[in-house]
Image (cartoon, rainbow, N blue to C red; front, side, top):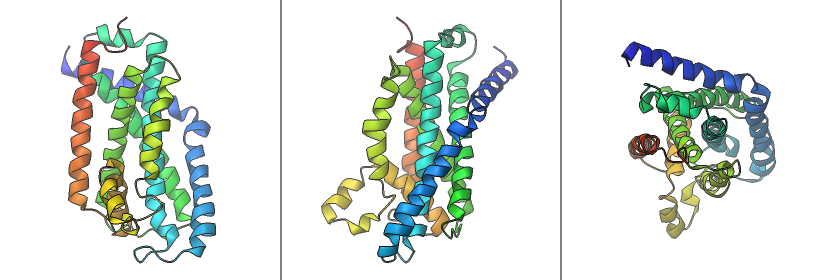
Length: 257
């Protein structure tokens, strides 16, 4: 298949995946902004008012980057897992797989849709955050890079979940029992410096901790971990999940009866 034809196919998938969530923006983009506002009101203003500064920042400022990343992670993931499983359920994913289109372009198309939703939601949540917290934007390039890479990472994770899922119930198991605990234990509402040494060491095994702290460093200039290490870990996970997703598609996992 000529490369220019592959690019046209990729563009088509990207447009389809983007329009898919934009058509129902009231269900896909608005809820994260409302949820973030509630987090700020309850945790930032009501509870945070009773707490002292965290790493020299007000509590509302400190939790803002984590809340933005919470929205980015969950929406990038859910967009791809639901879209790919729907393609399996409606049985039109087979048409893509038997076409001359390389699996690489199929993966990039679905992941691009997850990235688009992650960026759209991040913009909505950032605008909401500005009403509650003073964000300094210390390192804009790092901030943008972390959003993009994290969206890509969890879009890939959602794709793998969609490949393995056999029913609609299966697409909610990983977010409920794996993703949500890791996110909330990833330092959104606290600095790991507040934890006893043992739990600090345990927290370092949570990959989401590195993403949230790298994003916090990009906005506020503070982090509990080395930002260079955070980028290395994110890139390592992206490469691993990308290769694994291609291998699963080539084997027909979850698709062939």
